[in-house]
Image 1 (cartoon, one colour):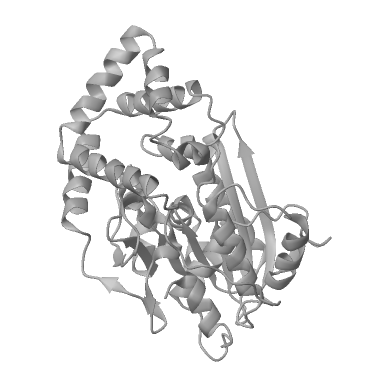
Image 2 (image 1 turned 90 degrees about the vertical axis):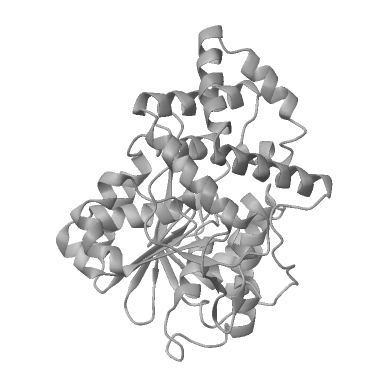
Length: 383
């Protein structure tokens, strides 16, 4: 069972019958991936069921990625479930600014007990979103500041407890915001959920906000987590079993659910632990300037490939490898030499071994014709 089949099997239970839990948090963190532009009423509100009705009339063609189509199907299942159908959605914002390298999206769900769940969207397929993710390795990014400001605004506008959550970068934004809001708002935060979200930077981890809120944080990663362990220092985490391989485990529709809870493992697998520790050591030895140089080079190469989104590149990464090398060879000589030195030093570590294993698994899945992840299929429901 995964989160989709769990909602179908248990969605008849209201939150009065079974209180809000971790799987509900993941459900709402997935729903924020649905583009809601033009689907809110004059007051800027809608419900989960109405969102599905409007989305079904707006998006007549499939979404461009397999993952987004799963999110759309998941919305349909939630709209058919009494547990979620009438939850109010408000304060939707989707801010993408390529010039400022910013991608930020969030909305707020009002729960039956009067609490408010703030859901932060993870990285979309845009180059802007992924560039901002990589920028997190050497700076505080605009989306993190926007997340803290958003929580402050919601706290001012709404009464009651606050819950924060998100998948992927959304998990990082939830944790970062909780650590940087004002004291009165922090006191109202009941729980923070991060689902395979990168950890916060060390100054945040060592700050007063994190020390105040850390015992209210649930951070979940799959057993071969890549995204959740990348770039930044990571807080304490719990490990969930996934049916996918390598990077594909980032898809939370592949996470196992039994008896109303995640199937929890005792630790990450050995290869992942060794690679993550080596990567953190390697990053610690790189200066801020070196990290920024690496990120800029990576995205200069991708831009040189003519790709408009990360999604199209990842869907056929092996097939586009020649274009990648061609774009790399077009860099000026000094930049190419410096990049080669940095990447060679990475690949010579245990982290490099983990990276090679990851790419091998991706190529094997593509050769077998398997899509990203292996979430369960989705029969049509009546809403």
